[in-house]
Length: 362
Image (cartoon, rainbow, N blue to C red; front, top):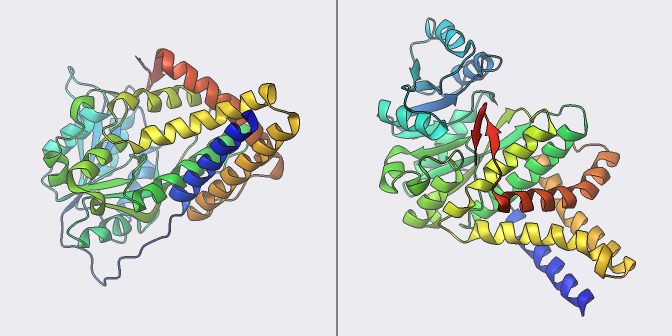
């Protein structure tokens, strides 16, 4: 009976990977772009090494944004100076700094939203690099009046090392599921490194709601609220791609995952809960299978799950034109992931403190 129970769970997991992973790009066939005013919001904290390249990539777009707002969350490095150097050359570039009594990414975004009257808001991070047609691809879906929010792909730089390969595969799988779940009107998550929405939609749904001061969720919590308010037709996933960097240490990776999971209590729609339950339960079942099942059944389950996850990852890497890591890293990451996923899930339930941008959170 245990073999049957585990097998049914693994089949269910495969079904949902297939259900949410079958993203098919949808083009918006139109010669023109929507006649809207578009503003890019770039909340930053200590991004001096990256902000110049990020802003240059935004300034060199085929359809330049009308406004680019850099909103500084009390940076302690040369971020402001780097921005000022570019502002002297580009009038569409603006700079704001949070007042002393405010802090955090959502506070920075809220300040930017209050400062602009643009129709479309595009958010990104200070350590990103945008392809030349990013803004154009993110704006085109808004030709459809029912579309309220547009998502995009995030590619991690293909750096050397196990941690970088691990993150690149993990992010590719997450984004493939994200794109497919949006297309079905069942959004699992979103990524604020590349997200666009109607400013009117943000205020219509009350922004981030009760999570306005939480350190995470500026992206998916807003998408969930838009989906609940406007319906599935409000969502569109673009083929635009932005590149960013993997975190450099395992501790940084852990803190990032704990921050992502900390917002789970605010989810207003069921699909993220289903996704987290299936992912966590499947990885836990793989770990337990070696204890409670015959070795042949445990091995079969591991191969079945890894095959489906690799199918998902390959599709995600192809979508962002990123190479698949070496066979050794693919096998190694597949063997390591269940243990890490289970460990992070248990830690998240304990709600430990974590650090982000030099600040402690819980």
